[in-house]
Image 1 (cartoon, rainbow, N blue to C red):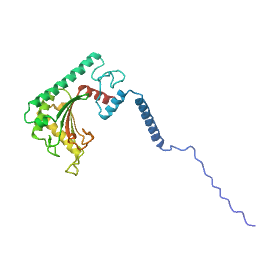
Image 2 (cartoon, one colour):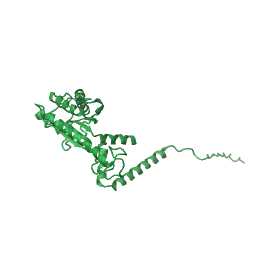
Image 3 (cartoon, one colour):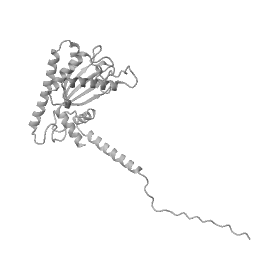
Image 4 (cartoon, helix red, strand yellow):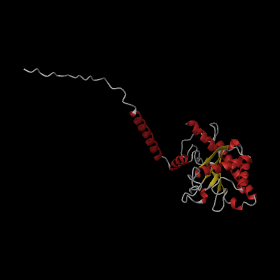
Length: 270
């Protein structure tokens, strides 16, 4: 009689509860919370008035630019609170008077620049290419190029002779103010002829820097200058025609003190 084959019994020991299953759930949960916050923000915006929507959109396009003309809050239609440009102790009439005074100073500066430029000989063509506009951001002075008439050598950051004289006049007038100044350079979308590592980004920044050097040498206070920026062709003046020569320009932004205080308050709140 043959012996029965031996039976091998294997016992598998089950462990207790497993440990951590990784951190993937945390990432998913964070994404869910972020999505919910974005959803409620969108729902809040949908229910706002057109003026509020316009102000919010304008802030993200150009931070620091607000329209306070019809509002006691930070944006039109917003909840009243401490107004930009005033301390908690200011009354509405005092805040309005301060804003009016600031606007008048910028208007006077613009008028002085126009008068000085009108007195300059031999710049008749370039004089028509200098635009002064008062906006909620402050005073914007733009040196706009045209076909056959430029402030710089073609494709270069080298200022032409009359351009330096124009920037000198502007700098002298702005030095009498306490406002911050930002200088911007812009180009059209035409590819830079030099190619290689140098392009429209570098050209726009170099042109803004060239204007800065002239203006500081002419007397613009170093403490006034808050930024020199090159935008290349990302902020076209004539969006319908990215090659239009008017897209090539240098912008000198004299920031209102109200806009500066708002930006500082927003930074402090972050």
